[in-house]
Image (cartoon, rainbow, N blue to C red; front, side, top):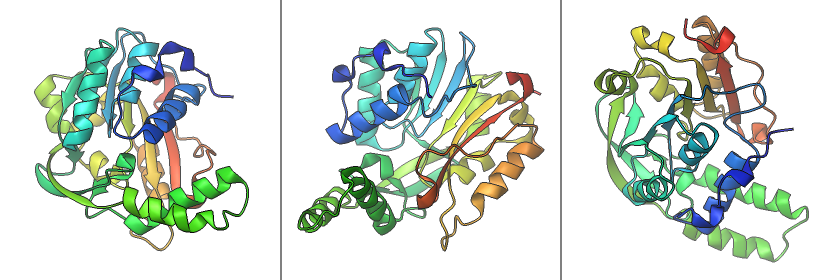
Length: 272
């Protein structure tokens, strides 16, 4: 059973873009410890990189479990970044906040922002609006444990609205450039949840900096019939080649949708 840390913070003080997302993120991160599973712990002075920070719930979690942690949080979309800034300020998290995405090159990229489901927002080259809308629809149907009947049409209309596409152009940088710029000497946890762009983030890490990373919590998309098909095996093999222990992905109910939670740790939890 995951360690329930929901007592560590008052969720009513977390400011989000959408109440349903804030509730989900709090349950996922604090109640179910989705990014810090059993067997994975952090030192008291942990250095944490939160790539795909959204409104900052994981940054709050890292600070709650490790008050002396140093958090580097990355969120490229302006409406969401402002919530990240607010929440870390309210809770006194001394985080380094970066209003851009991490990828495999310095530059600018087009983003598809979903105001009603900000966590599904993605670089436009990786966006899959219809597939993500169907993913949420299946989650709602499964939670109801019954045929939605007449409510299905209403749900479709609601999701159509929540997944309306708003374009943004956002800056992107390479992880290694940030490490060098900030003088980072170790990363105790690299958390990456970036809607199909996870391979791009890892490609932005130079050979010289891979040994600095001790633990990785990674959402991997491996969706049959899409450009991500086969990615789980490729990235898992890559992490093992770089000296990480990579157990089978967590069975968190997302596997059928092509989403996998991968956790990688260097033996002993220390850099190579």
